[in-house]
Amino acid sequence: MTKIIGIPSNGPELSDNISAHFGHCEYFVGFKIHEDNKIKSEFALRNNGHSACMEPVLNMKDRNVTDMIIGGIGGRPFQGFLQVGINLYRGVEGSVKKNIELLLQGKLEALGGPSCGDHSSGRNQQH
Image: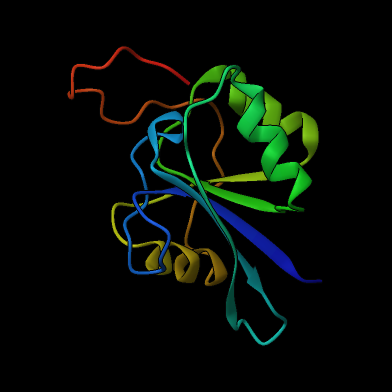
């Protein structure tokens, strides 16, 4: 089965870092993983903000994302991913590529509940 892995990130490339928080990312990126574990870019969407927490969740579902690697996420989108059947994994600090490789090696934990990233930037917590 081909996987499509979605990741909130700071940029559109494999070398860009995973975002600390789902709702505050610069991009939502997706990579198709073929049976030989070859990684191919599937989409890169700039996060221009959203009017509702479920909007990016449904956007990922519409792009056939099977798994999401998340730095931090609030309760509403967390529940939304569960409802649409997308698996969530706790990402680690570092590049998108590093996180995908860790997931493929079985080294990322399933995300058991909502979590929060770094909100020290002074922004209100939004999801």
